[in-house]
Length: 339
Image 1 (cartoon, rainbow, N blue to C red):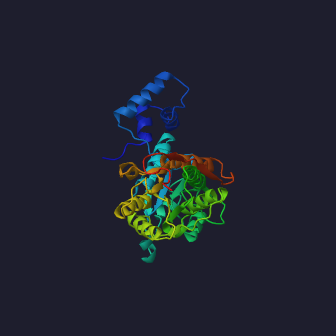
Image 2: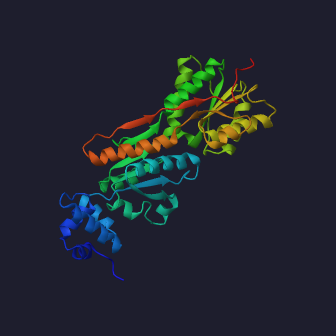
Image 3: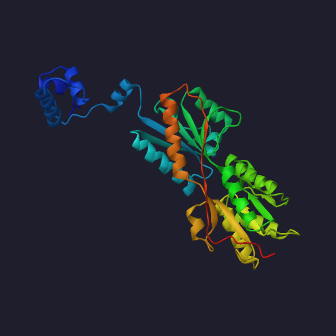
């Protein structure tokens, strides 16, 4: 059976195609009886408007793309960002096209970002995670409005949404200092190459500097796992002046630090305080529950959609950075030092 068209509705209603169009789009201002007849015929014929054609006529796909970097796409960190993006997109009447960038696709010569996202099938793009400069150039060439979440492109004027990594870390370390700690170590994930981690390390350093504290306690690790935190803590506990507190730049390494401390016969927080960043679900489930800097990830996703819609509606608007505030969550892994 062939698809019912607007022409079929017009003929069955004994009106013009233009009249049917006005009725179905809520723009008819004529005889109410005509409106009722057209709607009744449309229901009887089970007419479904061609949504894609309507979007083309409006000059909008009513769709947004979201692409996530596959370094850590399955953690609840990026899952929460995605949830915030979806909530805000739906609230504004937009559909989402979702994809993940897998580094191995580049080696295979396969498109990392689906072609459909770059050929005007979406009105704008949200990219979550670290973006390579060459990938940014491809998106730029497509003239696609872009917002990057949890990262940025060095030296480029691009819209981005970050958490206040510097401020959150600074506040947390100042709080540790207020408890009396002077030997505060820092486990630097991803060797500090990711912007969010780099900013947290800068906040850590600034807090020590402002308090007049000099302590050589930074350990760079390759990854973001509890195993990385465990190994880093092993190194720190071998120092001549081991730390009384450890600041982990993500929750996972902080949890690894707690496990290592316990294995070495130390009590947390009596002998060693441990503090993380992100407030993932595992932070409140570990023992003791982890004191951490809460990142409002869903709000980052919501803000990213708002900023993207602003760019779509005002293409000439100058891109800017938006920092979503953090919050220090007090649990049971921190206390004042014994000495």
